[in-house]
Image (cartoon, rainbow, N blue to C red; front, side, top):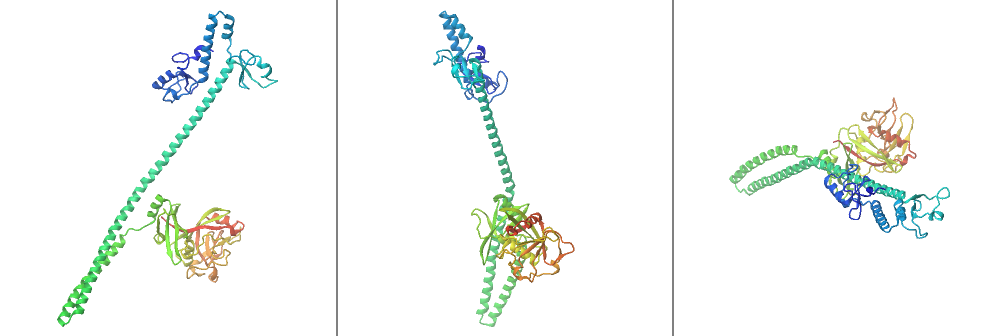
Length: 507
């Protein structure tokens, strides 16, 4: 190896302890002093011009194999100089001609070879017993200079691998930073979109406070009217003469006329007041849900207090079935009636979540045909307002599978076998024109009126039955018919469960 190769390519000084070679990451090395100058200038390798990113020379790793090689060469040069001064030309010529790794302790000879398989230095005598080359053995023997090159190459490859690994880690961290920035930007956009909603709600609250004060002032004014009537009444009762009674009646007439005028004005004011009263609507709920993800409503009746969750799905508000389990402490709670009143009256809708085999399989949407007793009952059993509900009920029958008029039946909230499930509203009849419907796919039908004990159950026609009509049709499936057909083919049908249900509120 040329001596120039063991020196800095910039200053051409030999590497030593004060001028340690620093690996630039591209395979080239420069001494510590010159690296710092390169960092201050352009941070590019002086040989291949590849950039590196260290900010200090000490941040770059020392090329120890190159440093050790430089030391060895310096030691050999010093040894040659000493041999030349003592007049030993033969030994000096041998040292200059071949490198060695020192003296073998076992054979008292120079170790001029390296076993790359056993990773040890060896002399010629070591090869006889300890290191056998192919085909008799597996050892790979190299001269010292070639072994040094292979060892340097292995070390540099290992260092290069470490650089590559560190670069991958750096890229991963950069990706994480990018993800955080993206997430933060999305949340900033959400906050920006919610500010107008929040400000609008604050404005409504301020308006309501003003209306509350107006009503409180009017309450005091009404109390004054009542007091004036009482004083007039007292004057009439205390009159002792005809003149006193006449004067009291005259005062009472004026007082009553004044109160009547005030009452008429108040009625007119209340009409205007009710029209300008801010209403809590679906958009308010949507804004709240954007901020808290889930809200609850509370319903109280003779059965106690129950709660229902409100969620958003496919741009629709979903009022889930009432449950006895209270909501999380941090969840906002509104009155049940304020949300229930938003449901459509002309063509209300409900949903059923069906599941079997331990998984929710799909959601079914049902739209009622107007405001009929059967439709009202289906909605009440989906919401649970009357107490019982379809939630956790099983389907109990699937008939005419694969034929015309295929149907699936469920909704027996009493027995889950079709023998129970009484009506929860009055007036559930059959045969009227409002229930006379063609037997088309998706038609929702009920039990006949004579089956009083099971008027709450329902059936859903899955395939059309041409030229046939039903006299109990009250709704139609608008989405989820495929889920119902899969449920009808599941065996046993009793494993198909209504996991959740509720009402749909348009936004």
